[in-house]
Length: 262
Image (cartoon, rainbow, N blue to C red; front, side, top):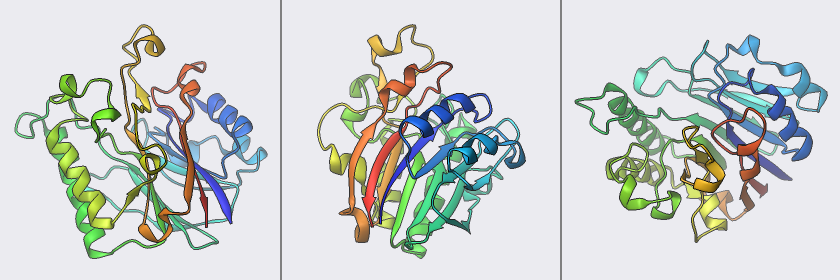
């Protein structure tokens, strides 16, 4: 059963409901994973999504912060969530499709501005979160699974606009890149986006601070689609919908797509 999946840090699902609806209408992914919903679950505007056929939703929410949701027009069974690093944040939700594929939707902490856990508690929380993810994947090896979300790390040199200039900037520091690699290796996860698009600069986030984000193009690939080895060869047609960064009242992230023939 082929299905198309998209992941998008929406930066407030209520504020940006119009562009979520636009995406669902124009691109029609079978499954849409959202991060940073910034809403209690009962306040997520589900009516418009359901009218477009997205009648299934699982979510974890918080007022004003964090929050993850999976919208689907395919039947979706909730299979739980994890509170990594014991932060009490709504940052993970998992659901299983009828074909047996489990989808994990993650929102990894951004980590603040200073890449030093002694000076910056948030950076320590980010590293602890990744360590807990790694340990879980070691203990319970994932199978027939897809992991998506805003992982808040751009791991490769061509995942950022300037490798040298960002080496000491949170999201591209060597300690974060190493932590993400260990987490990926622990689950045997395959980076589907880079499996499909192995070479070249590729971004999914552009700062609001840029006066003209498109012209400056100082992006980072913070949003990811991974799959376990048993289904990684079924993944294809990866793309970043860059245009969405220029929609009205946009998120600073663009949606990332992949299709799986499972």
